[in-house]
Image 1 (tube, protein in one colour):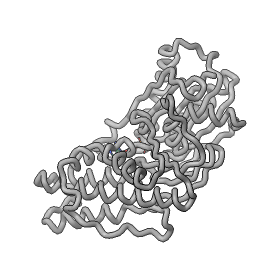
Image 2: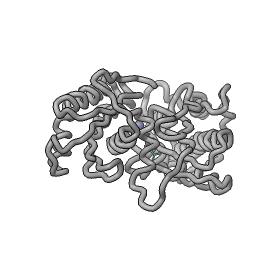
Image 3: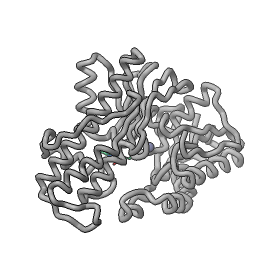
Length: 340
Ligand code: KG4
Ligand code: ZN
C-alpha cells in the first residue's frame, strides 16, 4: 500500500511516500528555518506562507523520484495537530484536495504520536512491543505518554511552560548562540563543567509534568550575577569557559529531569519499555544518559533513528498506514488542532 505522508505543523514542509508503513520510498523536505533565524524563533505567518509556496512542488518531486503517478497512491496521511494553525491548514487542505481528487481515504495524524512511531521505522531485527512509555521532546512539546497501542494512548504529563527544546533555544539566545539552540548547546556542553552551576530542584505539582522556564530564568540571573545583561539585546562577548559551563550544567539538569520523570512513569505504569522521540532526542548526551539509566533499571530504551527524530513526513505516513489498517479513517471534515 503506497501512503502519502504530509507534515506542515511548524517550519518544515515535508512530503513522503512510504510503502506498507515501513519502507521509505521517498522523503522530501523544505525548511523555512533560515527565514526565522533573525527573529530567534518561528514566526507563524512566515511559516504558513512558505508551506503554501513549496507544497505542490514537493508533491510533484516525490512522485517523480518515486516513479509513481497520482493514481498509485492508496492513502493520504496528514498531521492535523498539535502545531501552528496556519501551517497545519496548508497541509490538511492539500491532503483533503488529494483525497477528494483521487478518491482515496484520508487519515489525520497526531504529530506527537508520529514522533513516537518514528522509533518503529528502519528497525530490521528489533521489533518494538506494546505497551510502552513514550517521551516526546521537541521544540514545541515535552510530553509523556502511556502507549497501550497507537489507538490507545494516554497522556501522563506535559510541560506547564516552555518545552524542552524551547528552553534550549531560549538559553542559546541568551548566550548569543544560533537558532535552533539545541545543537549549539550540545557542542559547547562537551567541553564544559557539568557541575559549574547548581540549579535548584525543578518542581511541579503533578509528578509527571515538566517545567523548564524557571531554570531558563536561573541562567539569566546567573549571567546578571556575573555582570552581564543579555536582556538589553546588546551583543555580548562572554568568556568561552563561561558559555561552555552554562551549556553543560543547563543541558545536564534538563536531561536529568527528563530521565527522572520518564523512569518514574515506567515505574508507575509497571512498564519495562521506553521510547524517546522528537528533535531533542538527536542529542548524544541525552541518549547516553537514558541508556545508562535504562541499564541500571533493566528497562529497554528505544530511540527514533536520528534523521527521523526531527520533523518529517515519513513518521506521519508510517503511523497513517498503521491506524488505517486498524480501521481509522477521516473525511473532508477533518479539522486542524493547535493543541490536542
Ligand atoms: O521535533 P522538532 O524538529 O520540531 C518540533 O516539533 O518542535 O524539534 C526541534 C527542537 C529544537 O528546539 C532544537 O533546538 C532541538 O529540537 N534540537 C536539539 C538538537 N537538535 C535539535 N536539541 C538538543 N540537541 C540537539 N542536537
Ligand atoms: Zn515535531
